[in-house]
Image 1 (cartoon, one colour):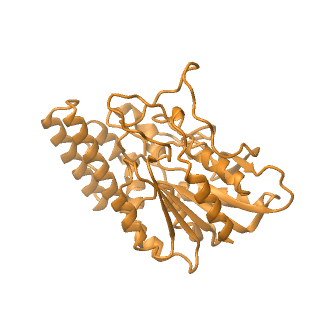
Image 2: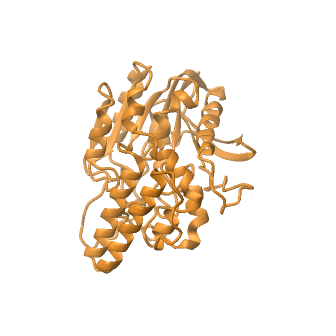
Image 3: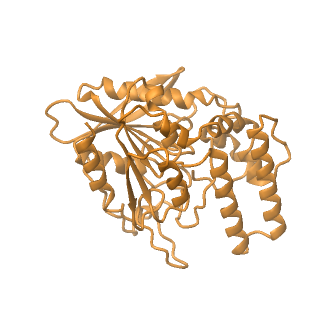
Length: 359
């Protein structure tokens, strides 16, 4: 969920592969740090890494397996699923090239004695688009197939105990995690990080509204432009949700978001109510919900709604943590790179405590 209103129509190919959602990203810088800038210490441990790949409908998907250090027998395994956008296996995209969300989870899991597999989503990293035409609509089923194939690859590794598995879904990835028992024919434990709590297009509408109104308040766009953008966004949402053709005259980034290429994906995701998915989980599924109290993308109300379907889940609200669980200090005028901000220290213990009791 890291696209912005500055995106142009020329980015439609990337938007298609990403199946993008819009978020407010003004609190972070999308720049890559220079040599002079200090980077925050990495959490957890490096572990033992092995590169691998698997095939989905003829597309080779590249991934990284991270094992705990000093592996002496089969260990629990976790599949890490990225959030929205063309997000690579480490959790990075064009807007946040140093987020390292998935990499940080992998390091913390390794420290907790859990192997993990993370992979490049369609349209990102070494995987890219393969032979697919970036201007064609992407079958939403391809993302589901990636999850299923990645899970199979994980449990096929000799070091992984297939009877002790978890699925970690970050942001949009939480919707796939909540359906993991259907997609992979297993009943893994779930770690839902900054999870989606409302229907997809409702969340998207809220994020768009907040971003447009913020830009308007800062003088970035005029009131008339703000009204046009929001009106077009509502028209796009109504068309997708109603199964109608999206108008071809939507303005600016809205036209890239609610495009012919994205319509099928958006409709498929919007059909999923997270609360209904939560209520349909197999009985006694261990669930951990992580949410950062400084998350500008997923609100407390979103998580509160999701929890109505997860009455037995453990919830950890992380103080001062943003959408990628790095510490966010709101200093007016400050430009803070993701790489300079440490991961919230509460995340590691929460993961360790959960996996210690999940199996």
